[in-house]
Image (cartoon, rainbow, N blue to C red; front, side, top):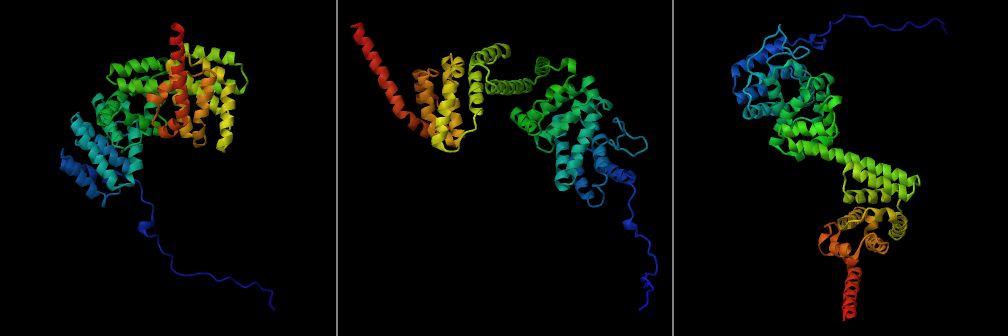
Amino acid sequence: MSNQKQQKPTLTGQRFKTRKRDEKERFDPTQFQESVVQGLNQTGTDLEAVAKFLDFSGAKLDYRRYAETLFDILVAGGMLAPGGALSDDMTRTNFCLFTAPEDVKTMRAYAQVFNKLIRRYKYLEKGFEEEIKKLLLFLNGFSESERNKLAMLTGILLANGNLSASILSSLFNDNLVKEGLSPAFAVKLFKSWISERDINSVAASLRKVGMDNRLIELFPLNKRSYDHFSKYFTDAGLKELSDFARNQQSLGARKELQKELQEQMSQGVSFKEIIAYGKEEIKKSSISEQMMIGIVWTSVMSLVEWNKKEELVTEQAIKQLKQHSPLLKAFTTQDLSELTLLLRVQDYCYDNIHFMKAFQKIVLLLYKVEVVSEEAILKWYTEAHLAKGKSVFLEQMKKFVEWLKNAEEESESEEETDED
């Protein structure tokens, strides 16, 4: 047998050239821009014709590759250089958003152009959001009129759900904030948005992307207070936005307060000290006793890992509430606070199904330790209860309420006898 290594076979033959379509195409938007500009110059101010042209051209032009160029042209008339100036060496059109009349009707029509384009070519959606983010960063390079039109258009697109509120992060840019461009732009944008929908739509969109507590960042650090925010937007005719920001501030403060109370309770701080802290917060933060009793209730109930068995969870709840009754009593000095607590108990028992059968026993305990009065219980029963679990809870309380009414009648009867 030969030890000589067997030679491996080799391929021989003609070397093929790489086909042209397989070569990486060089990024060159010049021809693309010329085609789009020519089409816009022909359609002119007829925005329905513009929408049809864009729809038809998507089959011939590479929208995916040149999305940024396309949006630059539709907004500014040509390709934008860094900073927002139009590129000098490129063809441009006078038929674009920035040259259009500055009125709501025209801005709505332009919003429809973008809406139709993106619905037809879904892959442009992300590129469009990136374009708007970029344009917001370029605000300093645009005229006041151009900024106004962009703000109105953006507000309408946000209202219609064509954009995510995350694009607003560009307005927190240090330079824009420092020069006062961010709040001025925000006024126009939010007016446009609210006029198309309402403040609830704005609030929901901001919460969805975690922007609900960030609007104060529209102002520089030396003006970053809720008082300044409130005055600025109220004076600009946006009181509803000012109120929304105030509510968000209050909500944040309540969360922090609840967290602090829970920590104090879990660390074994004396009830006397916790009560003093709570009373001080009521004065300092201008919150009502009704709000405070809600926070105290939530804090007390959050300290325990509850059993999943109904019969055991009731025992747990009674023990926990009896132990913390001095705290509950300290913040139910007003009739409305007592009623607020009863409503919080009802809400909690309904939302936590294992507590459904515990409601009556909890209320009875609160009555025995003098946290809630019979007047508060009767008012809750007759007229002030929530709709949540209403039939179940009223049935649970029926016998106790009857006993309270009878006891009240007997007491009145005894008083009359004594007078005689």
